[in-house]
Image 1 (cartoon, rainbow, N blue to C red):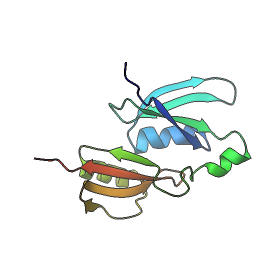
Image 2 (tube, rainbow, N blue to C red):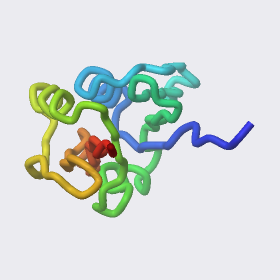
Image 3 (cartoon, helix red, strand yellow):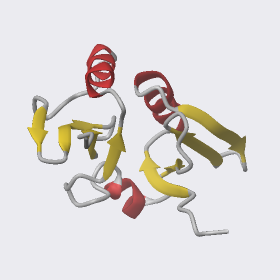
Length: 131
């Protein structure tokens, strides 16, 4: 079997608020929500049909808490590709998702930067179709 990227850890302040944002606002699937202890859960979400998921990990100490929202040092951290930019952009706006810019056309497709609930910047991208 070839290698695959199974999960990416994303630090969050609170499990429940993160779950609501990713599942309700962004429309991600809830892959798993398993209690591991009184303070720790295995909470995984993924865009519908995606093989890679986000492991939403509650910050456990001051250093981790300081990294919430700045996991990539302010750069775009994650890239969410869609088959219908306009549909997802409209849905996210209606759900209160903050976009840092209006949609723009680039050589590779339509894109706009949005923030997750902690301020991590993401790209929403619809790749240009060739042909």
